Length: 128
Image (cartoon, rainbow, N blue to C red; front, top):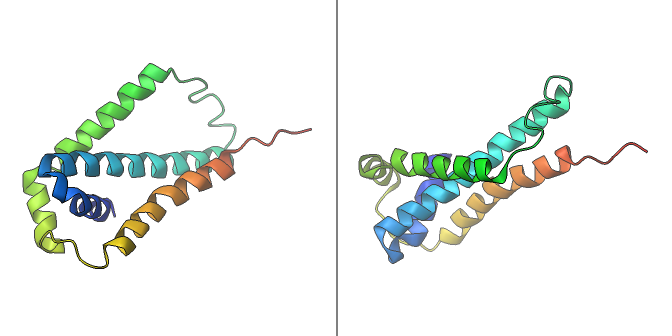
C-alpha cells in the first residue's frame, strides 16, 4: 500500500523533477504511515484505557517535529533509486495516464479516512 502511495505521488510530480518527486512522495508516505499509526494507537487506547492512560500525556512540539523530520528522512532513504527502479518496473513506466485522477483519489482516501476516524474515535466528548 505504501509503495502504491509512493508511486502515485511520484508519478504525479515527476514533471517537476525526480528529486522533488521523491521528496514529495516520501512526505506523503510519511503522513500516511503516521495517520495509520495514530488510528491504531487511538483504537488501542479506546479498547484498553487503563493501559494507555499515561502514555504521551504531553508531547513537546520540538520533539514531535524532530520525530516527523526523522520519519520523513528514513522514508526518503528507504525509497532509494534501486527500490524506486523496482517499483517502476513492477508498476510500469512513468507516464501520466488518463486515469491518474482516480489514483490520486485513492491516495487521498487512504490518507484521510484514518485521520478522520482517529479524530472521531479519539474525541473526548466529556462526561457530564
